[in-house]
Length: 187
Picture 1 (cartoon, rainbow, N blue to C red):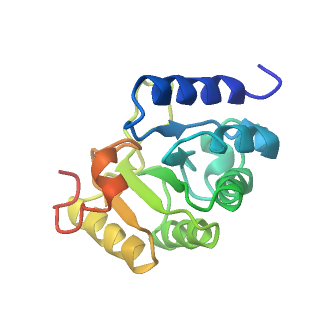
Picture 2 (tube, rainbow, N blue to C red):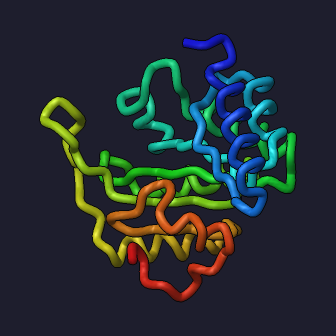
């Protein structure tokens, strides 16, 4: 509801963290700022390590899953804009699986994210929080999450953390270091 979508608050928080502890690596998980490039730049201009914005789901399911003000392309563009503005900042996003997406759609989303130079991808299982939320269409097997991780790494993601209980900040410090290689998915 703020004109800048809260970008100034994000920037101020990053500055406060860095002033208090300059050695802290900051990851900012932001909204899409309604696609406002100036708001994205205000956050990315700060001393942060990771700019994160969650895509949430595949292109086809976006209208039924996300707020109508958010869009698949808009989210991709926000991530791409952050990377263009500060190429040294890692960009990160997350997808929740089990909403009815196909393997092909997941791979297409990965390709779209890599085309936007997104560095880190997390994949987790969607769980229905209440009866008023979307139902779970499928439970993805841990072995399938492992295959998605392999597909993400093969596409060039610096890290792809993939498992049933993975969320956007899951093992963030290890994903930032790019040292999850060899760890079982979802652990």
